[in-house]
Amino acid sequence: MLRDPLLRAWLGLIGLSLASTVLALGVGHQAFVGLAATATGAAILALAWLKARIILAAYLGLATAPFLRRGFDLVLGLYALLLLALYLAPAL
Image 1 (cartoon, rainbow, N blue to C red):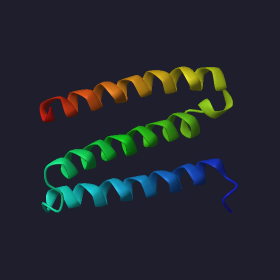
Image 2 (spheres, rainbow, N blue to C red; image 1 turned 90 degrees about the horizontal axis):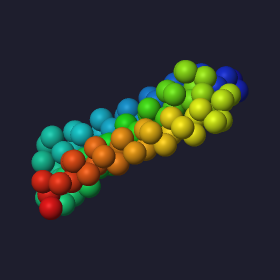
Image 3 (spheres, one colour; image 1 turned 180 degrees about the vertical axis):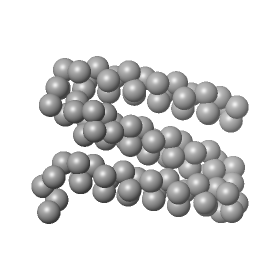
């Protein structure tokens, strides 16, 4: 049943989306404040980065093209680090 890579990717995306939602609800209900809220925001960004990697690999077929996948992973990782830096800049 779980041999289909698209089904595994879809289940992974559902799980990561659920985790993002739980974290966002915690921030929205003031369960996290201060440094914990900032760390939660960074965790949500990391989950979004993982979701983007799954989409690129499974749905765009980059899993079969390792060279292109590495290039996309590098660009996506640098973009995620830039977003993280911009997110954390006001906290400094």
